[in-house]
Length: 180
Length: 153
Image 1 (cartoon, chains in turn blue, brown):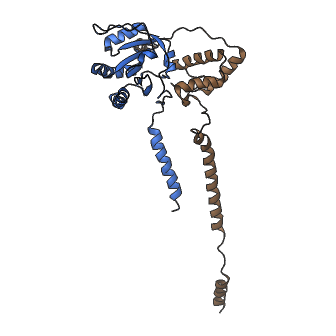
Image 2 (cartoon, chains in turn brown, yellow; image 1 turned 180 degrees about the horizontal axis):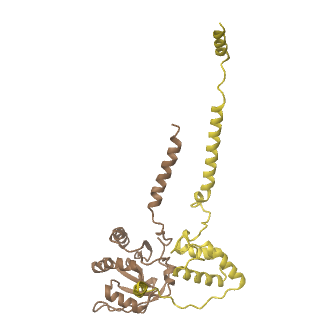
Image 3 (tube, chains in turn yellow, blue; image 1 turned 120 degrees about the horizontal axis):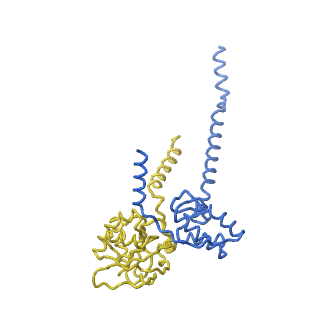
């Protein structure tokens, strides 16, 4: 009985640590969830698409992302995590389940072309954010980061770090909800 | 020989790493008051890449980009609150080393004081209990007298 109170305090603290220490402090909740995608106006990079594909316009803005759910993937050829997620992005592109828009973050176009040539191009369109300013407006602090936008262009989910099959399992229901 | 090999290996490793592209940017001049505001504000802001460093200290490329943005904002006459709003809107409350006092952060701000109060109350009650335990138990005068009479008999 004497130790009931200290024991209760100890257990409460241990429970707090058990929860707190398992959370990754590098994954910050984005304040942009539920908000419309931040404005941008970026040049597209002309890439050899599939034969017969319509080439993208020279520039695109956030308005061009509306109409259907889309994954906006900030990546770069110099980023190791991007190489990790790339095979899964290729798989996703082949499945045709969702449109993938790549935003090439602070990257040289020649490096990007070489990288996509070697690993394959999963993107419907690639935009170039050479200065990194669009990244700042979207709250990007370490590529790769992937934003899930619904058909109205609202951000419904953000994946920090490589897009994994597990993350995709969480994202897929969100897309179905917004498409209907 | 070993050094030469190590240098060669290092050179190979470095050539394999493609770096982030830094676009050249014109420097943003600030007047003395703005420069002072900029210098005082940076240590208040967290670098998102190396989270235990402030924007003033961090060598991360993103920190350099954000410093440049903040200089631009201050040059246009932004107040400290404007700059903080700009960053919080993008990266969340976490960028502020001193979170704002809101209902959501009330426990964060009051927690240490609540803990101190609880500790004081605990120590006080413990001390009071000990003082009570240390005091001699009240004497039962009747029993004492009986004991003495028994002995003297």
